[in-house]
Amino acid sequence: MLELNRLTSIPERFPLSCQWEITCRCNLHCVMCYTDCFNRPDMIRDELSTNTILRIMDELADAGCLELCLTGGEPFVRPDFFDIYEHAKTNGFLVTIFTNGTLITEEVADRLAALPPHRIEISFHGLTEQTFEGITQGKGSYQRCLRAIKLLIERNLPLVLKSTAMTINREEILAIKRYVSGLGSVEYRLGEELRATLDGSNAPQRLAIPESEWLEIKQQDPELWAETCRKQSQTPAPCNSGMRRFHIDAYGRLQLCSGNRRMSYDLRTGSFREGFYQALPTFACDFKADVSTLLIQVSAVHV
Amino acid sequence: MDKIYVKHADFVQREVAGEFLLIPIKRQLADVNSLYVLNETGAALWHRIDGKHSVQEIIKDCSEEYEVTVEQLEKDFNALIEDLLSIKAIQEAPP
Image (cartoon, rainbow over all chains, first blue to last red; front, side):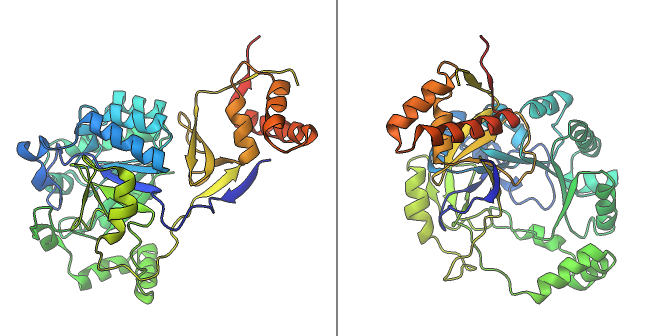
């Protein structure tokens, strides 16, 4: 009665996976951050309350949502973070946390280990204190982040470290990748996207490494180079946001994805089902194909 | 067949697109891409495991609701119990 299988019965459009930016608050001010512009008292006051988050989360669960990514800002800055997290876990969500790691103390790590996340991803943009804190603009953040990595590894929590390549850290990207490969089961992910800030400034994009220089760096690493060649030889896949993935911002607005907030449905006043099934399909996206593609990769053990 | 089982608090049951999933919340999934999925009979049996009713009573209850022979239900339930015990989703209720 036990067999290995895949979740094959998920409809083409189904609210399987949610990325939820539960706050724009953050204890750091990374130079390329697109949410930090809303890390200010008047905007923070307008963020969702604990009760509203839990109510919306219950609606997500009722609609069948399984994967929940809690991001920010810095999620651990919210005083009610564990109320939100534990509610998600005990309601059977597979929870991923995106964090800068600097607020993960021994006590926090123990609480996570008691109710482990599906995955925890830490932004790790520099291998030296100078570069790291040049990006985060937070004194002491480098050592606190290293402490978090150690605490999570000690507890065997599924950890991913990720960097965004920028002019500031271009000399350290390959060294970060090598450092992570020496950490055993920890995964590494390199991001290249620098987004305009939520209030419309293109300042982060000025930190982009010129294409020719970036290619030279990637050529030095067989994996990065293979990935680059693979991407260059392929036609980009059409965007599938809104099909099985969706985004909720810190103010309860349902959107296609984190990178496309042009249109929203207000979950404070409307229901999630109406938002997902009636509003979202009408939202514009420049990268959508006429015919959607399958995206689920999850396999399943059938009991 | 007169054994009574109790669910382990470590598992939460979710319904996702008509599939009944068992999600371990205090342990990591053995494989991050693998989930435990109950088929329809499995879900019906799982719902009835309550630490009070014996295997025999549950099978009798199910046989009145589903058009399945008692023999088939016994076979399915025994397989399910074995699987659930192996992943520590249930345990025998204390006497």
